Image (cartoon, rainbow over all chains, first blue to last red; front, side, top):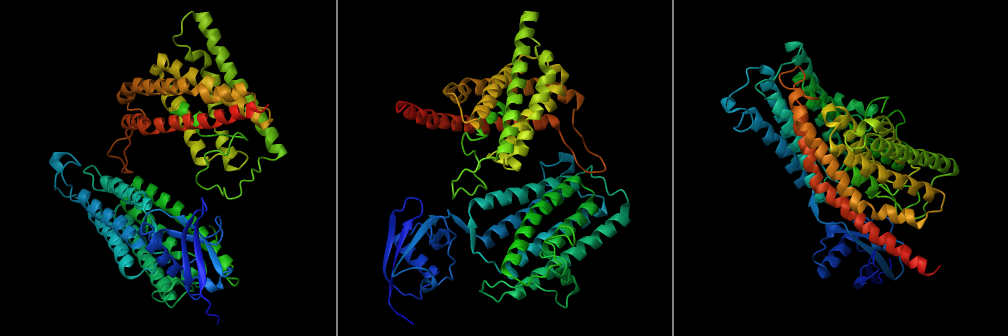
Length: 310
Length: 254
């Protein structure tokens, strides 16, 4: 293998200004290593916020790409774009999930200044209200634990402004739902205990299902790698939904919230489920499309999120 | 705000790439433009809308001359106002199917805010229809829309008289604040009647465990004008500098 060191020049993608010139770069160097070198001369642009590409309007190069394997001469010209301040996915997830957990409890315990003063720190007389609190809290604790111990993220970071957007969404809806469910004038479900039992069953099954899918996806990808493989059903019956959809984790998630909506018979919960469903459908369709593009032998029966339909 | 947004956001056909910040692959700036059939349809649409708002303008003038005062003129143009303003919902469709290069989100926002004022405020709260503030925004919208739709018509036909371009990017300076004032005063006037009648409101307890206070909602709408209006206004001022100075340079070479 040729060991001729290469030269790398980095230009601003918009102004074409020469930002950095690296003499003697190993041909085996990865883009990640080049990003580290670039940070040395421009410390404000840490690697996570660098987008380097061969063409100013082209796609970003991946961190794992090797310099030698790219179509460059002895001097590689790379174009730089600033992705803006970045924040790690883990940080975003933890913040956006811890909020609802905490906020819901504020309403559940009827902390002062939410409902009238005569209700401060009182407790609801409806069983379903206590059950709903357990389910909602369980859901977000599960999410927090999965973020810490289960998920394997493809990207380390996302743009900083996303945390404000995401937290507003999660925290806002959590407060809105919790306000009504824990309200002194809350009306329990029309069909009573039967409705609650059915809803609880749906909720629990979907939570188990969602968790099973997360574990199956984790097992597809070894620690520290960014490989992508087609997910298949395992021995766990909850994963058999992979036969019919590309993103059963989203299917189960929607199911959980539908269950919660039936359990609480609360319109804001139904609206939250609808908005979540819309967003997850968009993500599922995108994921489905990338699977189809990447894998020739992708199972044709599968739909993105709803079996046979969507 | 509805008045402001209408002129600010949709640059529409040919007259500029529109505020398609999110989701337009602007890497290859080849403006494809609508095909001949779409262009013909859009010309017809814009001509019809121009005519419609002219009808409203004429209606206002005639009613003023007949009555001898400018009070309660709303009633004389109520129907065409509702018809043509509601018809503007089609513009959302135009963006969605791609024959107009503006952003669907922005266009929806501006059209919906107009439709909201017409139906959810003025139509719904009858006591407000005789207010002078209604005339204020109706006049602002009428002049704005006549200019805007003729601007689009001429742009589509690739023959835009400088006067129309000038009018579009200059009159807003007065028409925006006028329209916004009319809108805010109207919403404000509607408040006590909304509170009294409990209009569009639902309170607890009910079996869907939901509540909505239309009075509070209207107040939130009024507050939202504070961040939104200046942004739209200064965007138009910025556009004005860009577009009118550009034309001045071109004219020098004619």
